[in-house]
Image (tube, rainbow, N blue to C red; front, side, top):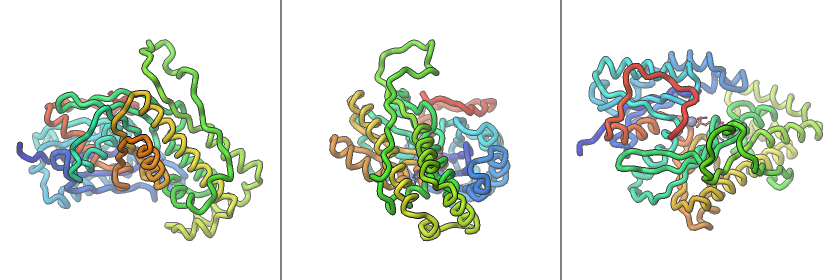
Amino acid sequence: MADTYILGIESSCDETAAAVVRSGEKLVSNVVASQIATHQPYGGVVPELASREHLRAIVPVVRKALVDAGHTYQSVDAIAVTQGPGLAGSLLVGISYAKALAFALDKPLIAVNHLEGHIHAVLLEERQKGNRELVFPVLALVVSGGHTHLYLAQQNGEAWSYENVGRTRDDAAGEAFDKVAKLLGLGYPGGPVIDRLSPHGNPKTVKFALSQIKHPDRNDRGKKSDDRPRVDFSYSGIKTAVLRYVETHKMKESVETRRKALAQIAKPKLEDYLANCDKQTLDLVASFQGSIVEDLIAKTLAAARAYDVATLLVTGGVAANAELRQRFEQAAAEEGMPVYFPSRPLSTDNAAMIAAAAFPKFLTQDFAALDFSAEAGMALR
Ligand code: KG4
Ligand code: ZN
């Protein structure tokens, strides 16, 4: 079969991204324009600013992805775009532009679920490495700023389908990283900073109780239960526990000093963070990260056992975390189960994953009508 080149566009949160992927197996170009500098002063993503930044970036980002790939608007075979979940205004920027391109160029338009994209980031890179032997059943942990979800992924012919077997009841793991970093005066986004600081602290200093969820999800009340095992997560408690620790250990003043000092530095380096963190803070950070990592691994492996899974995929922004990767690999190896991660650049939001997830839909001609719209709370099925 001839090669298929898909232009992917992603604008669901705070990165404007475009990429060209060949037949779901080769990353040809990958451009990501981050909005971190815009949102940093507010300590988190401001939706209105995100939409405005996407509007500014979308045309040059797509153009660069095509130029880097040696392609033109005319030479790609299809346009793929994130439909949801994400910020409605941000999604609409990508969707409107993708529709305009598809209409003007008379190319097929493919709508992709962002979470499916994260899963296909792993598959794309494994194929690129020559690993095409994916053994089912496959369990994917999608762990990002907005999601901590477990999916059983199935392939029926070329088409993929997903069954959710676990999710967070409150905060996502990445959200906990971001909130804890913010309350410790470490800035935004929190995950990468906590990742780099953790090896400098003692993870055994503070004991955080891991959440054990036994009661049914209140959101599922009234729904018919099919008695399939579920493994849910919860990360708002650990964030509150860190806040309590800061209060009871009289750390608030040093947090404020650190917040102000780091705000003076345009792009703080590891040495800047270390120079502004005492041992108590570093130990707290390491204990927090260690607990989250342990919980993510324990619950994912519990689900893997419950469903007798053969392969694990771990993806989403938090999958970039060094301790998570290392401990996951070790724990999965002890269970005799292969675990695959995307490379770090493809763990966080990008458009290559959208173009990769679109390829099976291209093959099955699962195209979107030009009047489809953004779905901020889109579920993956
Ligand atoms: O997948 P992603 O880029 O966007 C969403 O779909 O949410 O994930 C972003 C999240 C943020 O919460 C960020 O703090 C977290 O991923 N993150 C990390 C790391 N890099 C990004 N968390 C832990 N360690 C990291 N190295
Ligand atoms: Zn994401």
